[in-house]
Length: 99
Image (tube, rainbow, N blue to C red; front, side, top):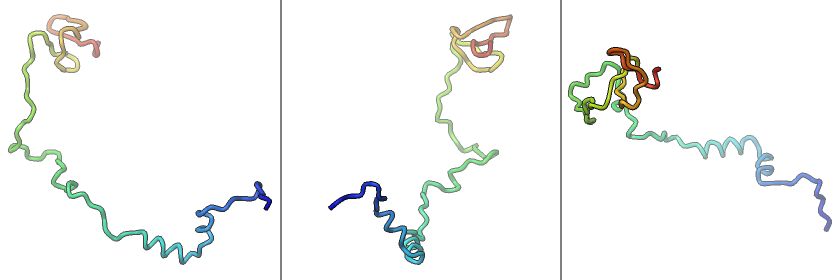
């Protein structure tokens, strides 16, 4: 038997393309579920609103005071190591990033 290699090939998706509109609608309705997937962790209680009362909360971060080999940049106000000091003019200390 001879094979015509120029003829279009048929696949499963071609066979479903010939299905009637009613059959396609029925399949779509069967595939859809009426149950909404809701994660129990996603509740409105997990969101923090601006201005919320946080007086009952405790800090979980340990705050370490500025060390002797650190300075506070007078431009960005970040505490930096002395090796990051770019310029000093009186009390004005500027880090490498802000210079």
